[in-house]
Amino acid sequence: MIVTLTLLALVSGVALRLLLRQHWTGEAQSQRAALQATLRAAVLYLDSEIRELGGSPGDPDIVTFAAESLTYRSMRSAGTSCALTPAALTVSTADLYGYRAPQPGRDSLLLFMDGSPTTSLDDRWLHLPLLSVSGGSCGGRPALVLATAIDTTLTPLSGFPFLAPFRSFEIMQARLYPSGGDYWLGARSVSGAEIIQPLAGPFLLHGLAMQFLDSLAAPAGSAAGIRSVEIILRGVSATPIRTGAGMGLPQRRSDSLVTRVMLRNW
Amino acid sequence: MRNRLGFALPLVIAVLALGGMLVTASFLLGRLESQSAENGLRSARAFEVAETGLAFTLAHWDPLFDTLAVGGTGTMQSAAVTTASWHSTIRRLDDDVFSLRSEGDVAVPGEAWQAKRQFGLLLRWAASLPAAAAVTVTDSIAWDGAGSVSGYSGTYLGWPSCQLDSVPGLRVGPATVLAMAGCSGPSCLRGAPPVLVDTLLSGTVSGALAPLAYGTLATGASRSPGGLVSGVAPSLSGQPPVCDWSDPLNWGEPNHGLPTPPCTSLLPVIHAPGDLVVSGGRGQGILLVDGNLVLEGGFEFSGLVVVLGQFSSGIGGAHITGALIVRSLIVPSSQSLAVDYSACVLRKVLRGPAQAIPLLYRSWAQLY
Image 1 (cartoon, each protein chain N blue to C red):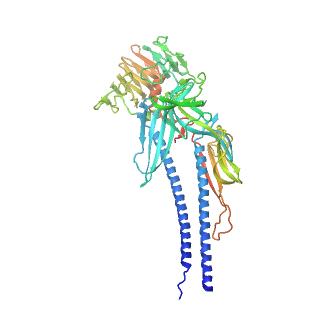
Image 2 (image 1 turned 90 degrees about the vertical axis):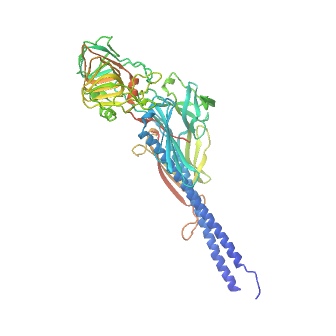
Image 3 (image 1 turned 135 degrees about the vertical axis):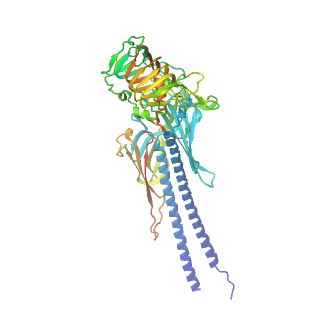
């Protein structure tokens, strides 16, 4: 009987230890996967948002920038108008590409002005308000009518291409912010007066470090000089995990990811 | 021996079941990670493939895109459809502005879904015009005959983007020798001003052609005539007949109109490496002559004529719509020459050797 109980205790102990190790290993693996997914999601978001930025020397898309915060014009849709009047541009839905439909009060418009056809030096994108959105048609095809206000004394309609390219954008902010004892990457619509919402996390203190570089890869002095952004992300696991051969004390593990995004629209 | 129920077997089964569940969970987690990484990889490939479509279409610009009507579209696609392919669509938005959309597709063998990415690029012509004047002469002019020079740009049926420009009729350098006995009054020489002495005009035709480069224009030549050439005219071939772009004597149709005649979209660069005499006929495009040029027999040409040597008008004279840039100009007393400046004609013919380039600002877009 004693032998049996001893053997049972031994077998149970080994089995329990094995199960615990497997549990810890599984949990560690799960946390690592979640941490890497967090880093991937954050970098994908920032990469996608920053890549399309640009502008012109007097009119950059980046509004303010700091190591842990970026405020910028986020492009929400692009297309070409089939009809242009001082009060509205009509856009065929077939020619409208976007993350979402333009929203008055939240979005603004950029309309391309060709100016003189003999030179590209006078090309520019005209800022316009988006006053309302309604249904319309482009030669029988469904369309959106984007109400705006073009001052034709300053910008005569003859300066726009026949099928004028336009974009809609909203001012967005992406930053690292503390919440619940951790740091999170969050985003909010500034033009939509939203409060910040978490996108990915948790991150370490200073877990987001953006460096804004000019064309010589030196730190840029102004928004108009930024040509690329180096992003360093340092994430941390949501819960403590045991790792290593001895499965020591549980700790929160961290991982990092570095990338550089070129601004495509300069 | 008593038959007692043991607990070893249930314990082992329970442990094995628990272990199996943990291993399965671990395996599923790993598989999920692997698939997530694979999706990211495919998405990145589709991104690069779509970018390739943009770059390829720009680098291999089809001249037929220039013949698109406003709102018209043209397409291009990757040569071989493999697991990764792209197709691009060019759309003309105006005379000078185009939109380019490229979609990259990455297929997964054995699976129904594909990874797709789509990007857009706004383009415009990078055509530059030389300094505006109907006639530019760097060395000397001896105009004893009849004719006219007009710096007032007119509108021409079928030629796009014509604006009523006013440029100098005659542009000369400070050292240019002027002998305008046959063409000095407003009935012959018109422009704003009729004669401009350009202190910046260098003594070479190449300098007068700036910002265009003679050598660069000549590399795009599709015709290299020499000696006496007669019978220059639009020609057709095939059934149904279409413009014969391969005919060396077909220099396009300068008389655009409605309905549009054949060969109006043919805008060749014609480069004569030596002397050239063109007798009668008509054409359009860019005519570059390394030696001397004689136009006669009422030859009509729409476009840019650049002569590194001497230009002279022969029996029957000639008519140029566009601009003429020469080292020296001779119109003998019994001959005539008419030159009418046209910015829209110049812009059109210079598109041939010009490149479509992305807009200076905000040309690239992610299309969802």
